[in-house]
Structures are given as C-alpha cells and as structure tokens.
Length: 366
Image (cartoon, rainbow, N blue to C red; front, side, top):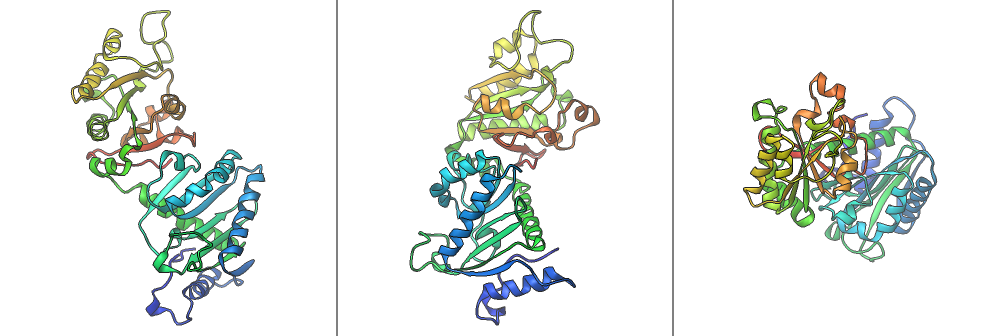
C-alpha cells in the first residue's frame, strides 16, 4: 500500500484544512476497491491527543507481547520531559523507534531503541507527533501541528499551538504508516557519512570506540578491514576517543591464545602484551593508533560469532562499535561461525556503524 505520507502544498489544497485533505487522499488511496477506512476519529486540540497518547503508552507498558512502538517527538529536546515514562516503557519490553529533529544525547538515547534524526519539515508525517503500533491493539495516532511558525517549539499548553489529526485502528493505515517510517529510517541509516560529518554528529558524546579486526597480515584480513582501521583512526583522532580493537580471529574451538592454563580472552591488553602472545599483526594495528597519539588496547574474542558483541561493548563502555562492511554479507565460512551483523540481536548494543570500503561510515541495519 504505497501512499505519500505528506501534506499537500497549500496551493493544491482546496478543502481549507490540509489535514482533512490528507485524510481524504489517504482514504482514497488505502481503501483501493475495498471498504472505507475504519475505526477512524478526526481530532482537534492537544488535550484529547495527549489523552490518547497516554492510553496507547499505558496499554503497551502492560502488554506481555513485547510490542513495538513508533513514536514521533518532533524535536529531540521533547524527549527530556518524557524520560521517566519512556524508560519505564522500554523496561516493560516495548521496542521503541523514535523520530525527531536533532541528535540525542546518550541519556536521551537510553530510553529508546532507535532514533532517526530528521531534517526539519512541517509537512512530512515523520516530523509530527505520532504513535503507531501493531500490538497488542493495532492503533495509529497522528497529531499534525498546523502552527507552522512555532512548529515543534514550546509546550502543548501554549495558546498559539494548534493541532489537527486523527486516530485509526484500520490495519491498512497502520501497515502503510509503519512501512513508510521504516523506509525513512533505512534511508537515513544507509546514507554514508564522512569521518568529518560523523565526527561533527557525534561530537563529545563518544569517548570510546570498539573496532572489529583480526590478527592477520593486511593481505589476509577480511575485505575492508584495513580500510576500516584507517577510517577508525581518523575518527578516533577527530573525537579524541579511546579505541578498543576487538580481535575476532582469536576465537577458536580448540585452543585459547597464550600459554596453557592462562586466560587472555576478553580482557584489555596492551600492545606489549599482545605481542608477547605472538599476535604481532594486532600489535602493529595498536601501534598505528598510538602513533596518532591515541590510547588503544585490544580484546581477544573468547568465542566465535558476533552474538556477544553488544554485551562486550556495553561492558567496556564503548559508545560506538565499528564493523567493516564485509560482515553485512560475509562468506559462507564466516556465516557458519556467526561472524555476521545478522547475529547481533542485543537491542542494547551501542551505536553500530558500518565502515565502507571507500572510507565512509553509515549506521548498521540489524
């Protein structure tokens, strides 16, 4: 059900209300040859909209189905007044995909599972106040702000704030809206960012970066790993962030790295310690970070696969995890042992960035 989730320009609207014109278009498009949109109520005023918002959030927090909520905050600063409520909602098992203008702080980001940063728009649905979920009760609410001069600013109670919107339980509306929001997020995630752009975006939020690598000569590394290391050095230098090199080649079904009876996996190791263990290529990689004035240490993977990356990154207090693009669609051998982004299931994994072969970064889609 492909529908343009955007208000028409004032020049093409003949109904006086752009939101009413939008609803008519939505009905005509999504009903196709079927019944009109069902379970629909047109809304005026923020008080009724806030009441519906709270009802949706409360039902999700009581659900045992681990539902997914898509929510629009308009601007990132709006999250501040919702921190406690959304932390409780997330703790209840609800997966939260949030949208708004601006980059969240780590504290703001901690109460949602994903944040999609938007460019300012008064007409795109993703920039509005909305909540949509398929379970436990299918529901879509959109509060369209029509006070464009103060769009996304101030409080709901401000007399100048004006909203029009609707709530619907029609699955055609819900599925179409979720599909649109997913495509918005995916397009943002797939947009490549240069080191300079990513550094400006992250600013002082990042203190520690974990980089996936291997203890192998450059011509034996997995494709893109050498380029990923170079890009990571540039990023860490720009951010003045600490680096942790996570050596996935240390994992073995048969032996542990180091002398018999010792455990060297998943503990921070210096370049000298790594070299003592005979991992000279990893030691050289650490030296390249240190040559740029960066603090860097290594972690040796204790077992195959990417399943534990989220847990390890959280334990090490890494803010960003950088993975070479190759691991999105790796070879059969790597897929068999679990060295693929698809194995990362932990929704609390720190920000996951794919490093591309041409020196750019983009958010991983897992």
